[in-house]
Image 1 (tube, rainbow, N blue to C red):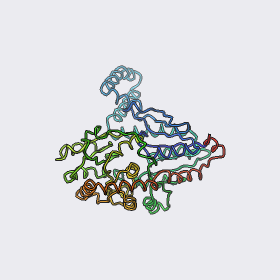
Image 2: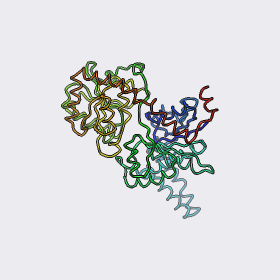
Image 3: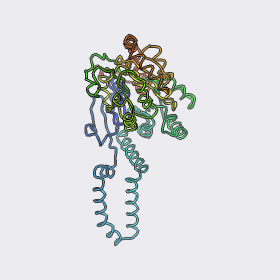
Image 4: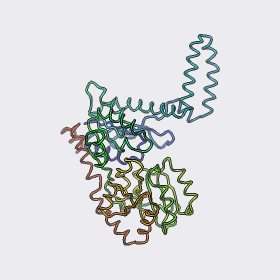
Length: 441
């Protein structure tokens, strides 16, 4: 059986795209080992998880033991360390001043790694990368797969630093060289060097593939971020109104996903001043969680704005189906946002929920071609509010959009897209007849 080792820089609890890819490969006869990161703050997440007979998840530790001890015990840990040093340092001085000085320098470095945030981050990330490499190398897979740039170094070392190098796939979920929070020129330089070791690159859509061709000189494969196809009526029902504290006769205006910069979330809160019906609900978490909650509390419509923490992707459809309308109002603050064809757009579609979306090329094309919602200038609060009012005040229009999603999801679903992933794998690590026999059994 052909073995695949895949890397992802998260806990693998909400990564629907990676789950789809791993499941598709394992269902098709490949043995998949996914290497992710453990979350010491969440005891429900296990370091090893066997999803199926051919799909396993290995989560490496996030913190080196010294940082983990500091995270767990804080000042108590520091007091214990200080007490031990009082006993050790005089003895080292007695042996040699040089040894004592070297020991004190090591202690100073250790303290810096704990207290200086930037050094601590480098130390932690370095430890994660090292553990990922160690775990991935011993897998000795037939093919290696890096999800995004932050796992590409690990995959390069595991696949190429061998007597017999292995094929390497680079699956870039984002436009690494033009996204928020990153130094564009620095990232472009790093990525352009590392892709020389890659056998096949994958990007999310053709807009991004054309951009890649422009800056790197080649056109990568595309793999759209479509949702799994399912019948929403088979998903368990929940009382989302009760969970979120929303009156049962009120319409839910839903944003689901990361609460991050550039997703138009502040504008949704501002737009509530002009939205005549419905309650705004955020489902997700991220860096903007507390700022958004503060902003909501200061809004005149604070009683119509609600928050729920993120939920596992397996359970999310049960929440999505309860919405009256869904939002995908990315801001044009970088090419990564402008070129997106985000998963949540297709999650809304699969749950028969009309969408109010930004007018960026990939998203606009889907919404307009399928007539499953309204396209707005996502930087304009008034346009967002007008679009919401148009849908919530016109039940017939809302039902038309909802009915259209039932046809659209027959086109925009993972069942129609996953053959492209299998074609890539079968090109670089084709399954044998024995593998197919195992799959059939």
